[in-house]
Length: 115
Length: 131
Image (tube, rainbow over all chains, first blue to last red; front, side, top):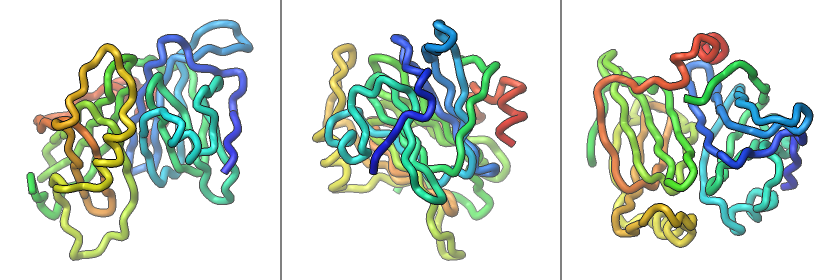
């Protein structure tokens, strides 16, 4: 499984806090994170809205998990995905953890704050 | 076994925070007899949420899995957190099943509180896009 960055202009900010909330009734999950937008040359707060969520996991960031996911432990970018037909595996990360979301779609949402 | 839930228990939402220097916290919010109850798990080393095939015989419950091989594997790969002391003996493999949702949570402790601690859904935009 090969992962690729789907928003190459977004990288984690030094303050790598993030969070994810899951809503089973709508099968959606929302992650909010502080990121660096290299197009706008500034740090921003962005939402990632996942739709038709099948599963969510988080695992410590180490080489074993990185190898299983097919991504680099260095992870310069914020969000990665693979190319499965119906569902994609999306991987984003905090300082010490991979967050792995199996879903059909993701969308960037502006105008949110990280409480 | 910690708790068995009545038939009308529903999963409302889950929330996990990842803050620099400390282990994550995962909250699982359920409505039991229409009352909001939040189960918070602290120092979560690993968490898997998955859909199960729901049958009428499925039991919604929260329990600690004793002698968990998965927990042993998780404890072999703990993250290096210089700002937080980690006592490996504190960690447990919690299993929370609500109808067709199963959560395997590898955490040091848990609490049960009345009401939901809302963070994201206090924002009008979040309510709009997540319903």
